[in-house]
Image (tube, rainbow, N blue to C red; front, side):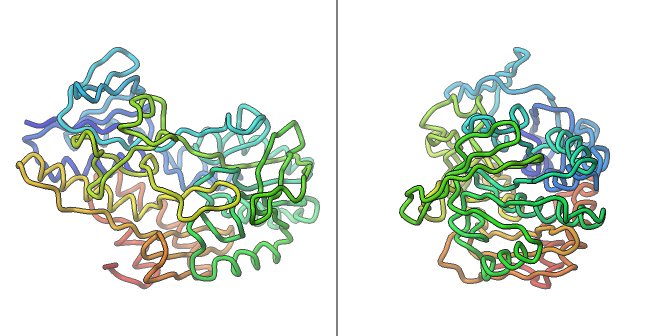
Amino acid sequence: MAHVVILGCGTGGMPAAYEIKETLGSGHKVTVVHNSETFQFVPSNPWVAVGWRSRKEVTFPIAPYLNRKGIDFKPVPAKEIKADDNQLVLEDGTVLDYDFLVIATGPKLAFEEVEGAGPGGHTHSVCTVDHAERAYDDWKDLVKEPGPVVVGAVQGASCYGPAYEFAFIMDADLRKRKMRDRVPMTFVTAEPYIGHLGLGGVGDSKGMLESELRQRHIPWICNAKVTKVEAGKMFVAEHNDKGEVIKEHELPFKFGMMLPAFKGVDAVAAVGDDLCNPRGFVKVDPYQRNPKWNNIYSVGVCIAIPPVEATPVPTGAPKTGYMIESMVTATAHNIEAAIAGKDPVEKATWNAICLADMGDTGAAFVALPQIPPRNVAWMKKGKWVHLAKVAFEKYFIRKMKKGSTEPLYEKYILKAMGIGKLK
């Protein structure tokens, strides 16, 4: 009997647990380790931050649903990976021996890289439901006493979609309250241009997102490096295409949300260069395996992917849900092959597909493959995207509670786009 340990139970780890268990069958053991007792649907956090969703609507307890499928669950943070000994050590002293380890931790949020940034400083985040709830507390204060807003993503960030989403969601919420005219907003991003998204742009993402920001009276600063944040003031260095500082900005704000750069979590990064790159992200081969320790796999945001291109201010490449779903499927089948003594053959589909909410409308994009040159680069806007994302939230949570191993993104999002299967 093989023992598969999955480290992390988010939008990559929980589907991985279900699919690996179903693929391997009852003759093998699956254990999930997570730093919380609760699953949270991260894409909904921008809605939580303006009060459009509650914690109860976007979270649920993990244990009952995993246990029902015969999967063990330990809600204890990991302390150390002993890769040579095939052991995972938890913070409570528990030692788990594994035959295969699947790292699906998601990222560590590197707020410390910008002085004064983050929930421990002077800006908010929508990366976790805890952060989003704290943001909502201050959002309610802003609504009572309006003032300027700064929103965006700092240097080194690799997830830009939620920054645009939150800017548009805030705009929509303020318009509904008939008070948008009293809240000036500025969008600040490390991207070299609006709509870059860490992908080198997708279709007409530049023109479309610039147009949306203009229509909503949201000026922007690109090639921006946030040098520090003080109470009520953000310091931003704007660069040219050569990486030279061309303007220094001091932006006053009453409410600020800046997505941070990501790093690998401490227990994973501490293993060293054989497992991780300098940022602590897990190195994987085309089969999702670490090149040195072939019994360690990784899926999701925590894997190492090089930037799509060099940019004047550092930017990273995103890992979208459809891509993560395909990583999970490849991992499950490659572990099955390894147990049978066979070589792996399954590879993830590195395509980027996303529904981005814009408050009362939305944008959908498809990049095939994610890294250019592409066979398909497509982006469309419409009310249907907003409605589809609202429905997908409920669909995904319902399927996770049922223990579904269906290809949810392919079945739902591609259908919503009218695309069908991708080859």
